[in-house]
Image 1: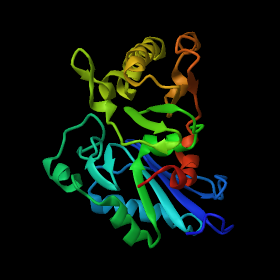
Image 2: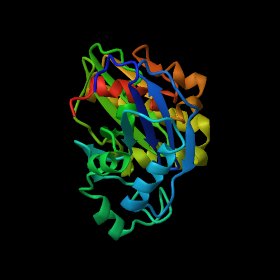
Image 3: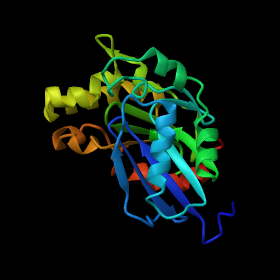
Length: 256
């Protein structure tokens, strides 16, 4: 793949707990087609997952390569764990042991490369999001707020090994996914939920000592203005569109 080739285009697929959306970008990161979206089907076998992504790709212009963002721990395109996709009916529903076994060790990159017929990289979804917003200077942390919490770390513009912060305990024995996920936002309301976001950021700051923190994802827009100002000058709220537009840049930022 020659990055200088004007015909280069990237199929970008953002896989979430509630929906899977896709678009095609040119090499500058500009969309060549309106995004398409389908609800995430459950129970989601690996076979159904591949089928769903292939069907989405057929609705879009041809691409020379693809970037896929998945929730969970992904190493070199292989799924270590994906908490949403091993459930019977979606996030916060019963876990199916058969799906756990099926997803653990699933080489998503190779399966998608074969199914799509083009080169593919598979990353954690927050890492794709982060590729669309980082400045490439210093230590930059990206947190995405949606069904749960996504996390990506960049050092000098290079993607660092993934840390599944979402599964770490934060308070009362709850994980970050549970403590500040969509279910709690709906239960608490935006005001109380936003205070939790500030509390989590304050707790993570001394752990990472970032130069810049970016907060994105679909729920970032629900952080109340009174709490946004408490996040600090080292924090930037970024649009959720980065979840797709980062797909082209991810090929330059990752060493995978």
